Length: 133
Image 1 (cartoon, rainbow, N blue to C red):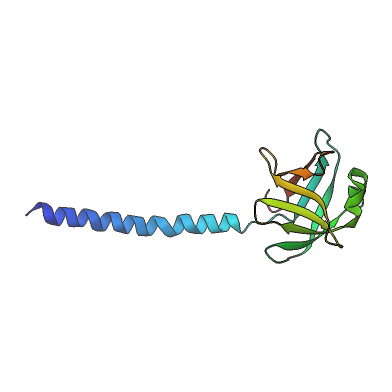
Image 2: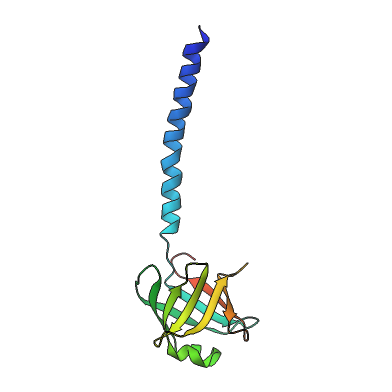
């Protein structure tokens, strides 16, 4: 019978600790998820040269207006027509022309933010920049 009060006190202490620890971890995770880059650095694999792609304005969850700098056309001529970034919902992300055509399609890569799937050549890397990244 003496064990019951100690057991109850232990359960209350564990529950209290869980309550105190849970929201803090959740708040940290939310704060990290809220960090958004202010654009990207696009370059061909194996080259240090690249160009900046900036967000023009906040968009929906799936589509964001972007502005590639003029030098991006030197990397890939069709980059001159790119106006949007589209999240495809399956881990893929595309740079899309005003006509709605995919110019470059990216997948999350190991070691860099994204690596191109389309076009097959040249292979592009896309790295996040800004906001502490």
